Amino acid sequence: MRKDQNLGEYLRMQGVSRRGFLKFCSATASLMALPPSAVSQVAEALATARRPSVIWLSFQECTGCTESLTRSHAPTVESLIFDAISLDYHHTLQAAAGHGAEAAREAAMEENKGEYILVVDGSIPNGNNGYSTIAGISNYEMLKEAAANCFAIVAVGSCAAFGGLPNANPNPTGAVAVSDIIKDKPIINVSGCPPIPVVITGVLAHFLTFGTIPELDALGRPAAFFGQNIHDRCYRRPFYERGQFAETFDDEGARKGWCLYKLGCKGPTTYNACATLKWNQGTSFPIQSGHGCIGCSEPRFWDKGGFYDPISAGQWGSRDALLGAAAAGAALGVGSALAARARKKKAQAAEEV
Amino acid sequence: MSSLDTIPVCTEVASGNVEPLLHEIRHALQRLAEGKEGTVIDLKRLPLAPGEEERIEATLGTGEVRAEIDALGPTLIQETSYPGVWLITHKNADDVVVARFVEVTYIPELLRSQQADIDAGIDRLEDELKN
Ligand code: SF4
Ligand code: SF4
Image 1 (cartoon, rainbow over the protein chains, first blue to last red):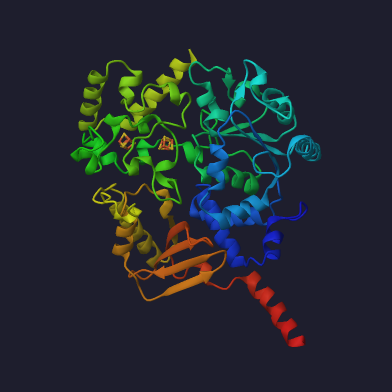
Image 2 (cartoon, each protein chain N blue to C red):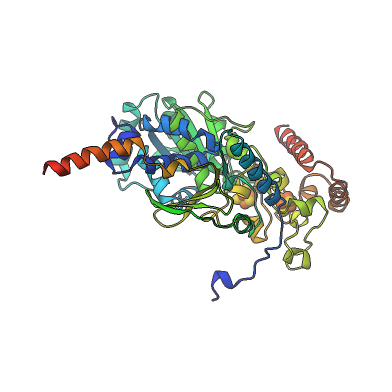
């Protein structure tokens, strides 16, 4: 797609009919978690959308986020979104390397000053900057330089959003999140280890469609995807309400698909879209496959106690006493979502101290 | 190694969302019949247990009209056994479902010929006849 072309013209040139375009808009609206009634607005905006420049920096990361993205399940629709942005630098995906690649990054930054979107995956070592460098430039320096003239930053993955695994105790590299370093730009945290691929594309589609920052939650995450916790949208929830818990991974409760709370499910304190968008071409998500949520989209999930310990045991004192309380609360039909939110707020407050 | 579909999966779990969804469709159909606007429901937004989407499909059944659109991958449009309730499945070129909607309307918008395509078609036919 040429830079001066809008998306409508580009799709027409590719032989995409108006019908095909409307289908693309329906799928994109669904991807952005917009109500189906918004399709006509999306169509109007997309038809005239210009192609934003995207610079993607990978710091201390495992490449899982890029892997997740390149495995997104809607090649036709999503590759169109990718064609529709100009991915000017992504050192894992691009063919160029070394100084040539850095020169291309600098040229794209200069050409799109104030307008490009900076995507970052990975945390930034802030103890000794020498821990991670690209073409001899430290991650810290490269982030500072690239952020200076960007329109907004998308921190992809829990590492860029919250420090993630590199930041886990004892944090040998002094890893920090993008938001710990950059204070003067809008930052959209697309957390998850890795994030759900369609959430990454959904955020890019939002930029493409509206050219604005989506509505964010208190942790800077797009509310459309992180506005509800896993527990609120979990199909096992009726079992939780009735106090029917699997006690081991192979007991009768597990076989009957009961709630995984006692096996360590962090769904009640985890905000993400897994329960509806699901993984692997929308096939399933961990809880559907019989394993609790490990809370990968929340800050410091790695240090919040054992993955197989109930939330109560990890954060709020004695395991048995609290399990008893949780089960009684469930049996009484206590609003668990409210309780979960209170717990989350408490956890955040505790972390901020 | 056994294939994935030989692994037994518990499918008797109920999210409690199927009946409310069917009622939502009933209300939407009543509104349509009263001359009010149609409704589109995004099926991928609802938390459903394994097997529940199939249950919804089975309850709605299949009606008289079935159409396939070939645009950016196949789209299946099926009128259900309840006239006015359509199941629309958008797939990509790899035959993977990318979006699924229940549309309560007289005729889904996507089935109509689109003005822009008609205009392009006139140009093509004119060119064809000139040669
Ligand atoms: S605790 Fe986990 S398995 Fe149980 S209802 Fe909540 S999210 Fe689902
Ligand atoms: S279910 Fe929980 S741990 Fe698993 S991917 Fe989703 S948020 Fe992360």
